[in-house]
Amino acid sequence: MQEAIVVRVVVVKVVAVAAVVVVVVVVVVVVVVVIVAEAVAAEAVVLVVVVAVVVVVVVVVVVVVVVVVVVAIVVLSKK
Image 1: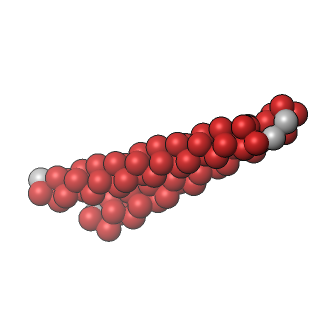
Image 2 (image 1 turned 180 degrees about the horizontal axis):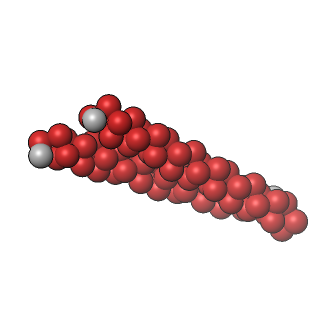
């Protein structure tokens, strides 16, 4: 029973950290996009938004993969 509790605590911590990282990255990207949008013409804004969306998607995917791998390692190491 205790092992299951430990695994849950680790998983919760990893997911919480991952969520915070994703939120921070999204906020930073949005701020950068807003700053760049203020500085450049409208045509460039579209490109910046596309790049920003791609970056956010990539970061989210990487974070999800890392979380899954960490959880898998923790779960497998407990057995």
